Picture 1 (spheres, rainbow, N blue to C red):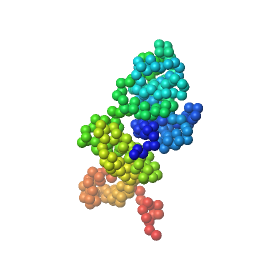
Picture 2 (cartoon, rainbow, N blue to C red):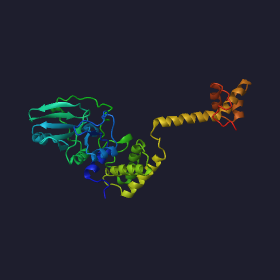
Picture 3 (cartoon, helix red, strand yellow):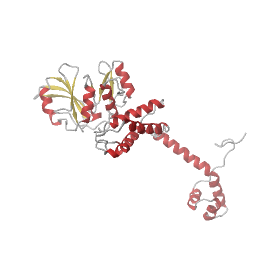
Picture 4 (spheres, helix red, strand yellow):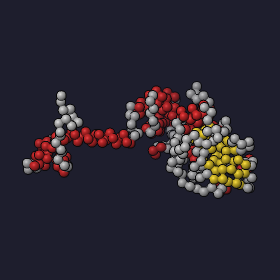
Length: 333
């Protein structure tokens, strides 16, 4: 039995896992968040927003699409000739939202195609489209999996090409593209599925917030692993996916700061300080022996340290004497 209440929810989950940038909208279609281009809602925020009757939109370019909002004219001939990857109903009677595969980030623009008798808006990297169609999310999920031959007919439009704003989305990641140079899951041989799934899920998990519940985190990782498993030509059995997800979830939960560069730098800094503190007596003694005229070879032999280490110590300032009571070490009672 599916963990999703509806097929639309399952499709949204697939798109969310694939990097779709969702936009939470008010009843008037305005974004709920002022920084909607930078702030991507989490899965639970999306579903809670929909449960409260909110509107949900997406930035087409986050999935490698450019969208057309046809708000005037009959687009039937245009659709038949240009073959978009997905056709969704819009709020306007007879209106359509058309999605084309596109590797070019396009700005918002008005357009009018007199030959087809239609006009509307282009929405690519800097705009969003509300999904009104009851089957819209399923259509988009299917379109995302299609061979990318339904390309945006850019020559028909005056919309200028612009770089994708880094704050909006990254360059679209087609299904065949992968994280961290990993092999795409599509087409992986049967014998390589376990290793491939493990690498894809762990690379994703490293950067995910762990949350406050170990069980909820485990479910989150398991759900993502299950979605990725569906990308194989022959998916793995559920128990194998569960075992892989459980291993990754446990490892990441036990290392909550693994993906935090600042935390890693702090740990490294503390480790350096600890090493300096532990070698302080030896460094001080090396300087004292040197002041007595001893050679580096003699000092190294007496301290039981490599000559290279002693030489490095002697190039450093003489460690300051500790003040009792101010040392990091216990000073006694």
